[in-house]
Length: 161
Image (cartoon, rainbow, N blue to C red):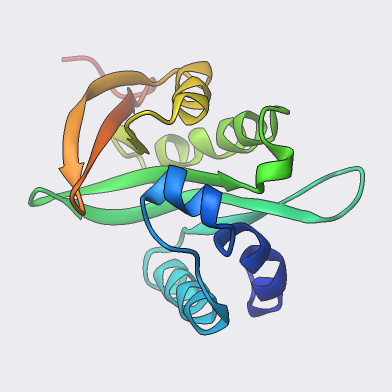
């Protein structure tokens, strides 16, 4: 992800339908999108991982983002695998392909015991993506006043004790 991706990402996060369904939030404006990108770049500098832009191989057009974010969840530090795809590219396998490409990095490189995805309850397409890459429903949480499904996958290379 780069600051130059602002206009392409605004086409995603500026979409009122996508924002309502995925986050229960209003669409981003230009300034908010710029701040969001900077926060993500700062996260990547601090932690060594973050979000990538998702680019269509056949056109070179940015259609989303996918990657890892460290966050606090009820007092626990977790790493979340998140993915957001432009609405006109939904249900074409792009989110699954991107999420599968990122999924093993936190296990192989960061040696994390678990990876989580937080999915707004009712977002069945995102739920299918999580399940296709091997995640399972680990519970439900309330976040920012909205119910979310917590999906997770354990590190397959972790030693069993």
